[in-house]
Image 1 (cartoon, one colour):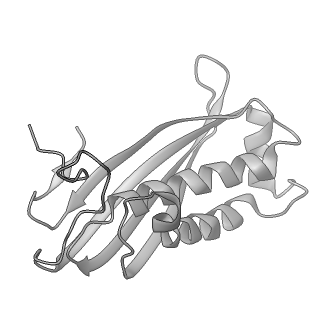
Image 2 (cartoon, one colour; image 1 turned 30 degrees about the vertical axis):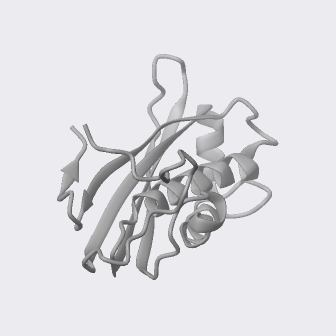
Length: 163
């Protein structure tokens, strides 16, 4: 079991010292799923949401969210992001509850002493919240799930792939 490093000798929270860590290329990919009524997804696809192009706005919001991660998550280091890519996969076929999904994925990249897992997960979370905000007038019952890290590479702990 890994030792927690976010606590000082007094047991208080601290930002981890990464000054002695080697700078490596680091990449992380995360996902989130947004569940909605079929009519909502159809309106998104046809450009019939009054607030505008839902996925274009959510894409920009996801990138902006990744850039603001250290402002939102107290112990995250500010990192120089080399890139953030946010994409969407739509599932028009309703599930057993009658809901359709949009799966959001985000990949964040940097070269530095600490990873970008939180930036990727923040990107998909903010993008999901943006979909909700833009569509809540037509579907207040939308929900989110499966916000998770899919993969990461770089750093001392090595690669990780969700199974």
